[in-house]
Length: 191
Image 1 (cartoon, rainbow, N blue to C red):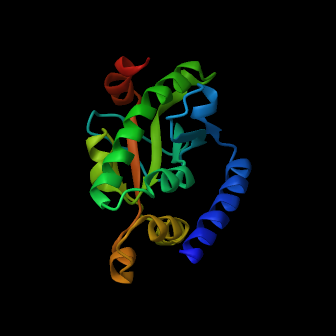
Image 2: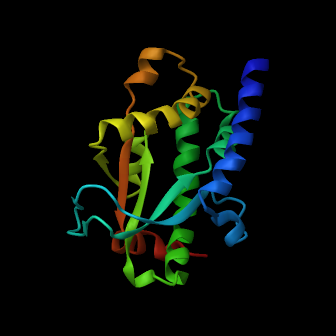
Image 3: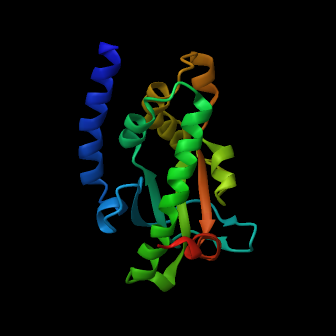
């Protein structure tokens, strides 16, 4: 338990620097909603062309909103749950509650018309699809391993199954959602 507490502490310190240097906007502060667990920033897409199920094509140099889960907060909030199912449900509901404010963020953005959608990286594919995201493989092997290495501590701390085989078999994927799909699904949920 002491080791786990130290890991949480150090991860919190790392997260503070990460937040600062990646120019993220915490939506919980932007919209004074303590329940929001997303942090966002504008990005220029540098990957391969992707066609989403609604026909939206994401191409090299397109403007997207990159979403990041506030992982330290999620780990603290879900620490009380013994069951992986309860943790998963909590994360699902928290993201679902947070996405309407991504709609607001895009609407208020000075380049709103240029933004084609949202992008993220996840190791939780099934949950993401139910929220309206589409997952696409990260084709660059080095980038995929880099993202896996960054997310490994989060996965290790948040799962009760410490099996190395389980953790090493999970791979990160891109998450995409077109702006149209986001607005159609979450605009009506804005409070």
